[in-house]
Length: 174
Image 1 (cartoon, rainbow, N blue to C red):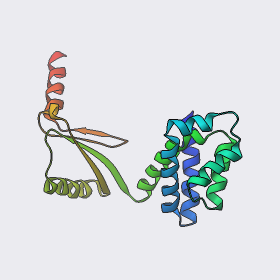
Image 2: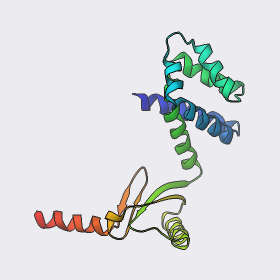
Image 3: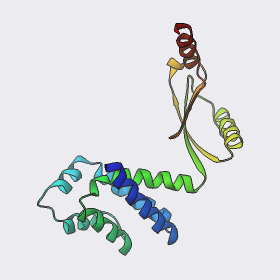
Image 4: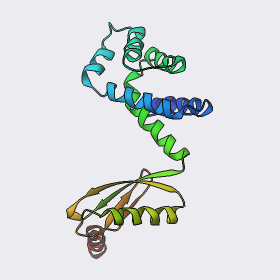
C-alpha cells in the first residue's frame, strides 16, 4: 500500500515540477527530505503523536528551503501522515526523471574490475543497441567467474560464466 501512496505523490510532484520548470529543485528537495526521514531520530520525532502536522512541516521548513508549493506538498503529506514515505517518493520521483530524460539506469556486475575504457565502450554499445542514454553503475562479483550481468528495473541480462554454467546444469538435470 505504501508504494501506491508514494507513486501517487511522486507522480503529482513530478508533473507539477515539470509544468513549472522546477524538476531539478523538486528533485533536490525530495532527496534531502528523504535523507532526513531515513534517520531513525527524525522518524521517531515524526511518529510521535504529540508532534502536530504543523510542527512536522515546520521541521522540514527549518532544515530545507521550501517554496510555497513545496511547503504545501509537505503539509499535505503531514496531514495524511505520509511523511514517512518520503524516501520512496524521492526514489520514484528520480525514476520518473530518468524515464522523462530517456535515460536507462543500468547496474553492471562483472567478474573483474573494468577499465575506464571498457566502461566507456560498454556505455556506447548499450546506448546504440537500446537507442537510449544509459547511466551505468558498476560492481564486481568474482563468483561470476567471467562475463557481466546487466540489470535495470525491468530486465536482467546474464552474460556471466556462472550464469551459463547454472543454465547448463539445469538443462542437464531435466
